Image (cartoon, rainbow, N blue to C red; front, side, top):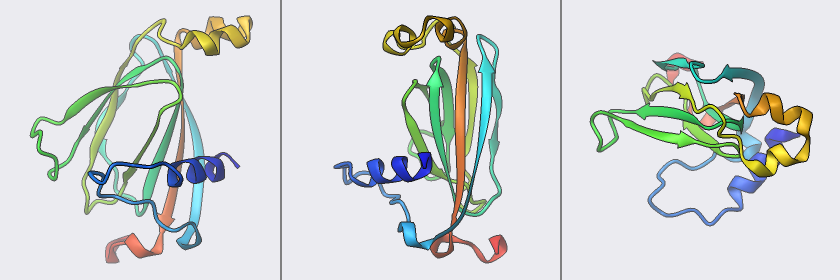
Length: 150
């Protein structure tokens, strides 16, 4: 259900023509799975790495902001880009070895959970203001699979 909602919202956005990657048609997605991860401030991280899996990854962020790193040989910035991945943000990228997207969470910014979220539940506030929760969906699309990915 979360995947379906996110997919529909993203597909209905008026996104700039500068974005070259388009989501695959929902009808061509034949497999997806979800996992949850928790990163505790301030040192929670996942090392910079390149995935080697067919398809795409969709990341949902809840709680604290993280400093997220991304780099690819196709990017203009040779040293990659680090940006603030905030609560409520969604990031989608190719996970294939062909695209070779290097990415990772460098650290969690303690106390950065949005106030609107904290105001919803005072008990939850104590935890979310010191943690980032990432929900990861990996999905495969037959159209974009490499021969080696099959």
